[in-house]
Amino acid sequence: MDNPLTTSIILSKKLSAEYKTIKAMVRIYCRSHHNTHGLCADCISFLDYAFTRLDRCPYGEEKPTCNKCPIHCYKPAEKKQAKTMMGFAGARMLLRHPIMAVDHLWREYIPVPKEVPKANSNRHLRLSDSKKIQTDPTYD
Image (cartoon, rainbow, N blue to C red; front, side, top):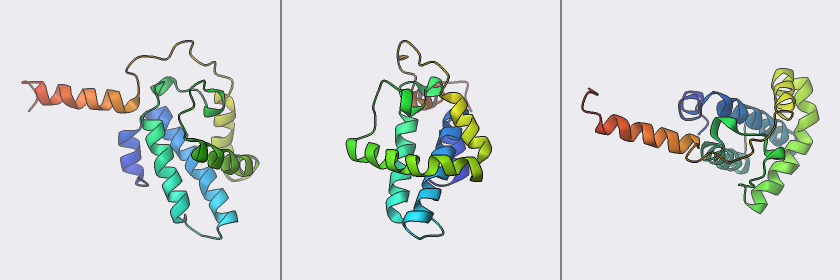
C-alpha cells in the first residue's frame, strides 16, 4: 500500500495526510531500531495495518487524532507497537518533518465529534460511490 498514487486515491485528503504522518514516524523508528535505509518487513506490515484502520475509521474525514479518539480500533499488539513508534519518533518529527509535526499537534486541539457518524468511513463512502456508478444508467 506504499504507492503514493494509490494512497491519495483511496484515502481522502485528511486521512491521506494522517497516513503520511504515520509513515514518516515509522520510517524514523525503523531506521533507528532496525538499521535499515528503507522499511523492514515488520514495519511495512504495520503500515499496511494502519492504512486499513484509517480507511475504515468510522469518523472518516472528521477523524480525531488516535490519542483522543474514544474508539480504539487497533488490536492490542498493534496499539502497543504504535505507541512505541510514535513515542520514539514524535520529538524527532519536529526536526525531520516540522510541518507534519505541527499539523499533527494542531489536530490534537480539534474537539472529538460528540457522535460517531453513521456510514462515514472512507471505505464505506468509496464502496457506496462505486455501487452508484455501477447502477447509474447515465454513466458511460
